[in-house]
Structures are given as C-alpha cells and as structure tokens.
Length: 364
Ligand SMILES: *[C@@H]1O[C@H](CO)[C@@H](O)[C@H](O)[C@H]1NC(C)=O
Ligand SMILES: *[C@@H]1O[C@H](CO)[C@@H](O)[C@H](O)[C@H]1NC(C)=O
Ligand SMILES: *[C@@H]1O[C@H](CO)[C@@H](O)[C@H](O)[C@H]1NC(C)=O
Ligand SMILES: *[C@@H]1O[C@H](CO)[C@@H](O)[C@H](O)[C@H]1NC(C)=O
Ligand SMILES: *[C@@H]1O[C@H](CO)[C@@H](O)[C@H](O)[C@H]1NC(C)=O
Ligand SMILES: *[C@@H]1O[C@H](CO)[C@@H](O)[C@H](O)[C@H]1NC(C)=O
Ligand SMILES: *[C@@H]1O[C@H](CO)[C@@H](O)[C@H](O)[C@H]1NC(C)=O
Image 1 (cartoon, protein in one colour):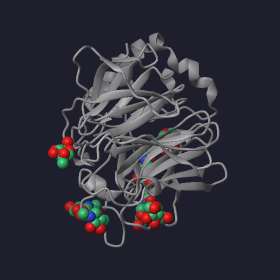
Image 2 (tube, protein in one colour):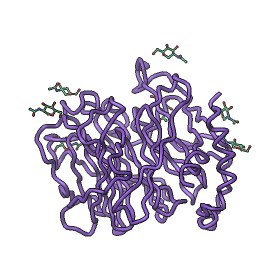
Image 3 (cartoon, protein in one colour):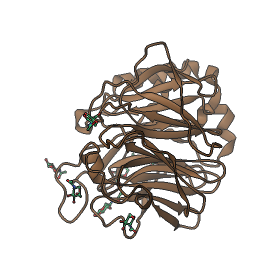
Image 4 (cartoon, helix red, strand yellow):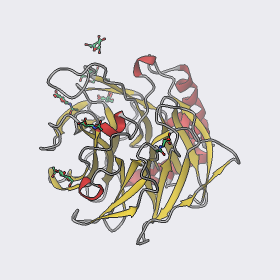
C-alpha cells in the first residue's frame, strides 16, 4: 500500500540514468555494511515518533531522535530489529522535553542531539520557556559525554532550538527558530557563544529550521517568517563561514529566478552526492531537491518529491535520511491523545519511504 504508483515509475527512470550520476560507485568503498535494498519499510516501535535519523556506516545501525519521548532509538535496518533505546536521565522523563536535531560524526561515532522544550513549538514561539540542551553521546563507548544547557545563555528570552551541525574542529552550531539565532558550543561543551544573535525580540517570528555543512560553509534554511503550519512559503537559504568569529550570513541565490521554496524543516546533504545536492523537508508537501555547482553560492530547485502516501500519516515530513546508497523520507504523525503515564500517542508503526529513484530522476 505504501508503494504508490509514482514510486514504481521512479524506479524505472533511475535504473536508466544511474550510470550518468555516477555518485554511487564513488562512495561504495567507504563502508563494510551490506547494501540496503529493501525499499520502503516501517519501524514497529511504540511511540517512536521520529524527528531525524542518521545511519552509521561503522555499526550499520540507524539512530533516530524520538521526538516526544526525548530518546534516541536504535534500529538495525538490515535485520529489522530494534536495539535498546538511549535515554537521558533528567531529560527523558520530563514531559515538555523533546528530542529533535540529530547529527552523527561518522569518524568518531559521536551523536549530537538537540533537546527542545515543547512550549515554543506548541505556541508558534509565543511561549519561549523551558530548558534546551545540546547532548553528546558516544555510540562507540555507549555513554553520554556531556550536555550543555543552552537556556543558561538565552535565559529563555528566545528559543526554538531544533537542529545542529558540527565543524572539523568539533564545534557545534545549534540553530534556533523563535526567532532565528545560532549558538556555537565548543568541543568540550563548556563554552557557549551567541554566534548569530536574534535580530528581533519578537519570539513569534518563525525562522531557521534546518542546518548542514559543506566544507567550512554552514548552510541554514530559513522559513522567513512564514508560520510552520502553512505549506506555501518563501524560504531563504543562508551560507555562513564557520571560521568566522561571529556568524555573517550570505544569502544563497535561489534559481530559477523567482522560485519559491516552501516552509522547511530539516535539510540534508546526502553523502552519496558529494555535498552537491540538498534535500529540504517540507511539512505536508514532501522533499524539495536542490542542487549547487558552485559550493552553495547559488542553488537550483530542481523539483519536489511529494509525500503522496496515505492520509493516515498526515504528510508530516520532518527530515530525510541516507541509508547505504538509498534516500528515505521520514514519516511523522501527530500523536493524538497522550497515552496516560507516557509522553506520546498510541502509534507503533512509522514509515520510511524510499525516494531514491525519484530523487535521482530529478537530478538527471
Ligand atoms: C517511549 O516511551 C515508552 C514508555 O513511556 C516506551 O514504552 C517506548 O518504548 C519508548 N519508545 C522510544 C522510541 O523511546
Ligand atoms: C530487509 O531485508 C532483509 C533481507 O530480506 C530482511 O532480513 C530485513 O529484515 C529487512 N529489513 C527491514 C527493515 O524490513
Ligand atoms: C519487521 O519486524 C516487525 C516486528 O517488529 C514485523 O511486524 C514486520 O513484519 C517486519 N518486517 C519485515 C519486512 O519482515
Ligand atoms: C509557558 O509554558 C509553560 C510550560 O507549559 C507554562 O508553565 C507557562 O505558564 C507558560 N507561560 C505562559 C505565559 O503562558
Ligand atoms: C538550565 O539553565 C536554566 C537557566 O539558567 C536554569 O533555569 C535551569 O535550571 C537549568 N537546567 C538544568 C537542568 O540545570
Ligand atoms: C511579532 O511577529 C509576528 C509574526 O511575524 C507578528 O504577527 C506580530 O505582529 C509581531 N509582534 C510585534 C509586537 O511586533
Ligand atoms: C489510538 O488513539 C486514537 C485516538 O487518539 C484512536 O482513534 C485509535 O483507534 C487508537 N489506535 C490504536 C492502535 O489503539
């Protein structure tokens, strides 16, 4: 049922044009993991409610931030098994604390997780209260390394932190949404700098939602004041230089001229395309595919893979993820009524839609 007609058509197109793309061959030697060719799959886990996911080519496991639970779920796509969930004492048991932005450094196996506080996201930024954290967890030694309290710097005057990227020196850049801001956290987690301060005291202006890196460039997508619940947007893409003492954003020129990018969530530069392709999750719409040939000074919107799966999934698309050589669209759901004594709804079935063929077809 989840393999819609458009997915099947896409597969045929991709097989024809794959040799032209060539990226797959280039990266295959980097991993000992078996290929993952299952196509669309579901993870059957109570209250998974995934926000972001990262595949680890070292352990061949998928790590998933479980939004409402405030945990990281661990799943083996190759064997369809769920491994023990990673919990964070003092965070996981608090109802208002959620797990959102997730980053994995493949070389060290360190996960960076943004813990956000529910009030800002429930009120469109009107209520900026609650504690926000950046947490580092080693998947190699299975322990939390440190956590930094982001609210100790903002004093909840602004908030909405929801995603993170990491530079070569181990500094983390946590992006805030209500309104736009960036906090830089040093490698030890002890020093937190306001790298890009908010431009307004009005916390209801919906701003940055997703972040990625390309070399020393920090790429940030900005909803540009359009509220999260709308699907038609006019989003911006910013490029910062992570070597700068303070962040100075340059606008990435969007092409074709006059094109409008919808209201975004997370962004991803899948490894298989060598940083030249960006996938922008668009709530209720799908995944927009962007391409840059000049190091993200400009970017071309080449098309959108629609989230045309059953209405049951409410078309909420928080992010995309690469598993092996395949690209998946992460399906989220509204939790509905909270199951008493827990933090989420009653769902136990969360789809990951294989959109590899559709993305490749747009890149021909
Ligand atoms: C979420 O929490 C519930 C209990 O509150 C637990 O049963 C479930 O396994 C958890 N799921 C994840 C992915 O953390
Ligand atoms: C993927 O396919 C393999 C081989 O058929 C199977 O063993 C595994 O359980 C599948 N994984 C998922 C997530 O369905
Ligand atoms: C994966 O495992 C779940 C149980 O956890 C099962 O319901 C589902 O059918 C399995 N999928 C495949 C493709 O074997
Ligand atoms: C903001 O949210 C918190 C947590 O839900 C709540 O305690 C507080 O009263 C709210 N503040 C306002 C001004 O509504
Ligand atoms: C985080 O910092 C805020 C602001 O200083 C403080 O109110 C809160 O208690 C801190 N949280 C923890 C768990 O230390
Ligand atoms: C704050 O921003 C929102 C959304 O852009 C706007 O509707 C509202 O008028 C602003 N409030 C003030 C006090 O400027
Ligand atoms: C989950 O809860 C909703 C109400 O929020 C209900 O309509 C649905 O039947 C429940 N589903 C399951 C599997 O219990």
